[in-house]
Amino acid sequence: MPTAEIITIGTELLLGETVDTNTATLARSLRTLGIHLYRTTTIGDNAERIAAVIREALTRADIVITTGGLGPTIDDPTREAVAMAAGVSTEFRPELWEEIVARVAAYGRTPGENQKRQAYIPQGAIPISNPVGTAPAFIVETRDEAGGLHAVISLPGVPREMEYLLHHAVIPYLQQRFHLEEIIKVRTLHTAGVSESVIDEQVGDLETWSNPTVGLAAHSGIVDVRITARARDEAAADEMIAKVEAELRARLGEAIFGVDSETLEEVTLTQAARMGWPLAALEHGLDGALVKRLHRRPLPALLTVQETAAVQGEALRRALEDVCQAAGAKLGLAISAWQDERMNVELLVRTPQGWHSRHLTYGGHPQNLPRWAVNMGLDQLRRVLVKEAGQSGRTGF
Image (cartoon, rainbow, N blue to C red; front, side, top):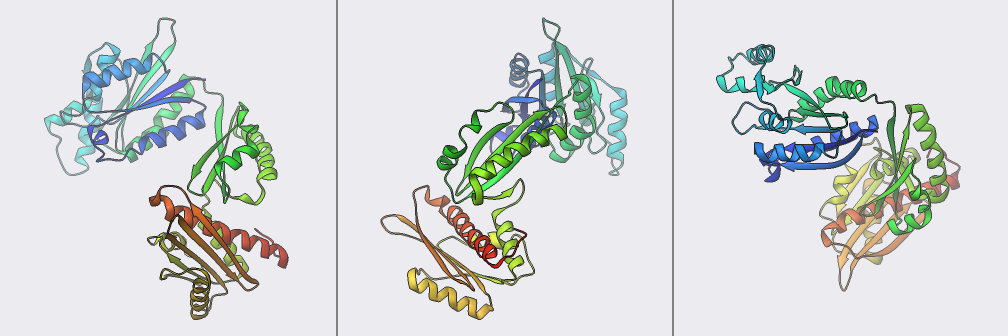
């Protein structure tokens, strides 16, 4: 399978003024194509440094994709840098200039001489027209000493433009030129309430597999279990993933709350709505984290969230009972965090069947406490709802 590297170009990236989203978009697309991404690099607007990074990347990768530095200003050096790396000069392409003139005219303007720079690309490069912007992209093909094909693909840094050209021009080029006959597909199972180390103990043997692969990623009370399969087509990949997923579900059970884009709050609130139980919630010491999470996805069920004073134990139970009564809610969730010798979290769930409480201590960074506490609280509520739904004979969870 071919290998790739990504180079994002722009001093604004190094200064932290602009957040790089292009790398993630490119990485996902390369993954789906079955192309192995081995490295990503960010570099400032300096032609010599960019050229050096491209040359180095070409010694390791079959495909090098750059983003950024294709604008009309002097500090947009990617065209010159790629030409230097390939050992050629830049050349003016009249057809590209005509496209640029037409694009600028659509805005009711006439392009200046500086925009003419965008019509210069490395000699012999394959041009990529840009119908959604003024910066043409291009591909420079080279051969190594053994005759192997390498490609430097330079795309605009504007995310929408980059993504458009990626899907409409670059992916078809890669599929044809590198004879891509496999895909890589990923499915992520989300777990909560169980630590990464415990998950690892339960599925560690699966993590040694080569295809499909299983990997873990922890996120403050949530652990993602990622299944990655490489196959000749999507159906074959789905079949491979399904077998591993079935084994993971058998081992991890109710710790798994969702798949791929599903969130813990979405799953939990959907369960509450299916039970027909309006929800009221209280939080303390979380800087509004619970309020924000519960209001991300409005549901038809009544949802009331309030900040409470620093209470715990019986006082927290009375406070939650009061807000449930006032809101006419059958379901209640309270999360209270405070610090003495340790960082403490009290979770309290109220349902028509009774009360459920947990006291937890947290040992991580204090700034991560609100996110961790909310995840633990939502997971506690989710598990209680699943259990009581099973007792009542309700299904659909």
